[in-house]
Length: 114
Length: 116
Image 1 (spheres, rainbow over the protein chains, first blue to last red):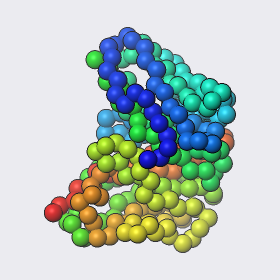
Image 2 (cartoon, rainbow over the protein chains, first blue to last red):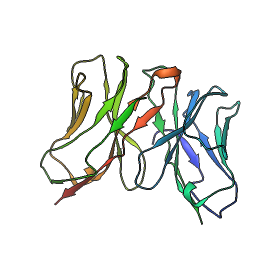
Image 3 (cartoon, chains in turn cyan, purple):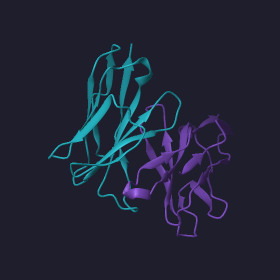
């Protein structure tokens, strides 16, 4: 158990809908990263927050957005869902943003768009 | 831009034997971290081993060891005395230190099968 929690575990929804994925980082971790893993692919970086501020963006679609709240939990919002958005979404957290800070991964949320 | 390449989509190994998974990467940085993650059917990402680029000594964790060749930008994972529980997807990852991001860049993975 990494100490990072993600809810829900599974989510099934229809095209065009909007969903929110939630991540609670390890106690004391200020940085949260979101990654997307499509079927049989590696993880792709989406976005990073540090202490409530957006720090970096990767290949995140405009239909996707995220935020980090004062209690440091983070939410990833996916809207106008398409079949291709079906994937495993991972959250990871680290203490800070330095090169030596390791990221700890949550169990992921599996999103299925039908 | 940094890239990570895993050229072996799938590998097989007999139980108790040794297998090596390959990974190459491209970067212009001199200080960085490299990782191997295991992803079993549960899909949880499990850290297997990590290597700091400025350390010349290869990292070792029990049956897992790496062969880090910095000049060649190669980072292979050796699994000794393979066990059935080692069967999983293995991902090589590079920690990007540009722009203060420190995001991970993952390869496409190698599926390891362990034969009884």
